[in-house]
Length: 367
Image 1: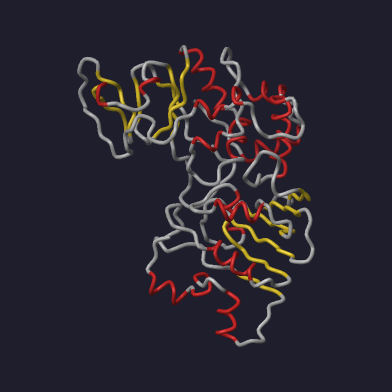
Image 2: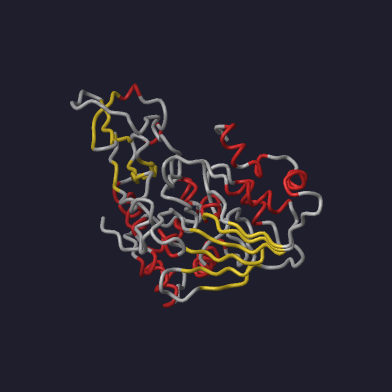
């Protein structure tokens, strides 16, 4: 991480030492031992707020506290590490493979714990029990709703993130059972993975701040850019040329939100729209393609508008950034019809209580 080393080494010597036990001995003396460590560590390097661009540091405090080998460790930290976060891949793996992590209390709305504080992704506190390994007691808290609790593994087969909602995990397993024919795998076959249709960022090599021409010349392409549309010469585009002439869907890279706060039910995605042949976009949008006809694109668009589809996206979405990866759990469908939630609920045998859960977290989308 890039840091002001003088300032931060002074303030956070605990996380910078390579031998935390020796550091503690130097500060407190030889006989200092820890039975219990409880903390609310600093969450990130300051960027003036709680933006996702800030580099997290809370995981270093957790790792160093573990190294002290206290009997119990409990900290309250942002929940974004469940599925994302800058530089948190190794931390997530170490936490989710640690069977001493015995409970997680997950608050979807940070202000339920810290009134007036907006923190995208919510917060969680955990209990790490050095001498008592086992499954984890996961409890999800959401405003005035009864807490949802389950004792379960932190990792599911073929998944490298923590699936946040207990009810969401049950729904996901139903979807995967239909799509894979297996009861224990959450990995879609390659040919059924919707994320294979989704572009990476900068699908056509144009940055968010790109501004095209206001007037069209022969053979120019239509560009959907930040703030509207413009035009660009076809020969200026070197990336994504295989889908330029196809029907496609554009969806905003950033999900709709309410500042730093999470409010549910949520749209999960910015409203997607159809892109005609000879259209492209800046990195403001991801491109979902190719589709052979307008009717196929319209079918896929209706599918994205379904609440169940967007719940599957939410299960892999740690922040407002909707990259290709958040579509990991979304299966493809036959693009020959208009899809509705009723169709999907029937296909995947979604129960009435599961439908109520979906509708509590995902709001309808008008196209």
